[in-house]
Image (cartoon, helix red, strand yellow):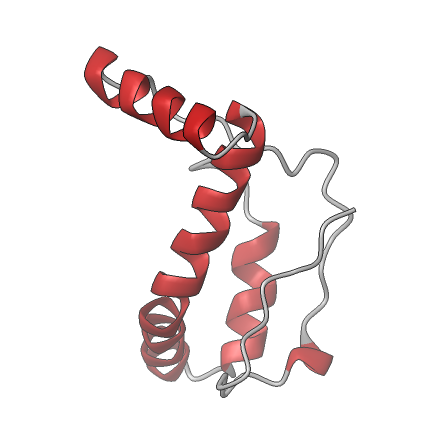
Length: 99
């Protein structure tokens, strides 16, 4: 099993986060353009990585780059709803849709 992405500078209290037991943590993307897929495949070959492994790394990189802004959005929305960011996180992680 893979290690989670670490957020050392997070303002969330992760001890208050209750993660569900997701039946499937694989993410399927919309189709890429032929050129983008070809670039991705060539990049995989040059790194001696599988397409799946490289895709997983791309998602991890995205989370690392984007989480700070996403966390700020979470805090703003939680404040608007007058709940804690951890409560909103727990609500959103259990919602269906957009998957």
